Amino acid sequence: MRRFDVVVVGAGPAGLSAAAELARDRSCLLLDRGPLAAMRDRNGPEDVLSGVGGAGLFSDGKHSFFPSATALWQLPDRDALGGAFEATAALLRTHGVDVAAPSGSIEAPVPGEWLEKRYPSLYVPFAERLACIDELWSACPDRFSDARVVDAEAAGEIELHVDRLGHCEQFQTRDLVLATGRWSPRWARPLLEKLGASFVFRRDEIGVRIEAPSDHPLFTQLPGVDGKLVLRDGDLEIRTFCTCRDGEVVLGHADGIHAFSGRADCPPTGRSNVG
Image (cartoon, rainbow, N blue to C red; front, side, top):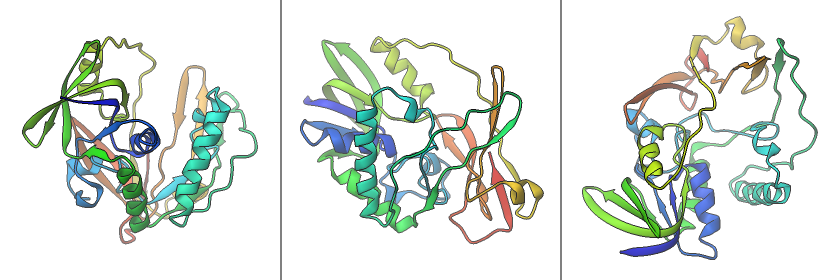
C-alpha cells in the first residue's frame, strides 16, 4: 500500500490548486473520478459535470474576481488569502489573463431591495483554459484520473480504497483534502462519516435556470457580461447566477443528480439563460 502525506480528491479549480501547492514540499496524491480535461465530451451528461478541470470546464470562459466570491474574502487569514491570490494571478498571467489585486469595499445590501453586484469578469479562450489546467495537473507528480474513491476507513491514518477502471487500489494518508464540489454529497457524506466527520444543516437551496430570447428585457437590463442581482430579506436570499448570453442550457448527470446549467462556448444561439 502506498502512503502519501496528503491525498487531494477532486481536480476542479480548488483541488488542482491545492495539490499543486501541497506537492511543492510533501508527497501528494491527486485523484479525480472523471477523465482528463482534454478527453472530456462536452455533450456527455457525465462529462459536463465530472472530470479534471471541474464542473465549469465547458462554460463560457468567464473568470470573475473580487468582489465575486464575497464570502471567500471574509475569511480571517488575510495573509493566506493574499498569497493565494498572487499565486493564482501569476498563473493566469502566463495564460493571457492580467488580474488586478482586489481593492475597494463591498456594498451592503438593503433588506428587501435588489442589489446589483458588480465585479470584473474576463474571458479566457478554451485552449488557454486547458493549458492552465494541464499546468496545475502536471504540478502534482502523483495523480490519477478515472479514479473513484469507493471506501475509506480510519485506523490511525486514513486508508482510501480507490477504483481505477475496475482495479481496486489502496492508499494511506495522514491528511485528506476533499475538493469534490457541490455534486458530491451523495457519495462523499457516507465516506466522511466513516472517518468521524459530522454534519450540520445550514440551509435549503432551490435553483432554477431561465432561458429566453437574448433581446428579452431580463437580459438587456442585466448589466455586464455576467450580470448579478441579489435580494436579501430576513433569512431569504435570492440571487441570479451565471448569466450566459447567446448560449445554451445543458443537462448534466452526477451520482443520480440531474442538473441544468448554462454555457456560451458555442456559436451564438440568439437565446440567453441565467440561474
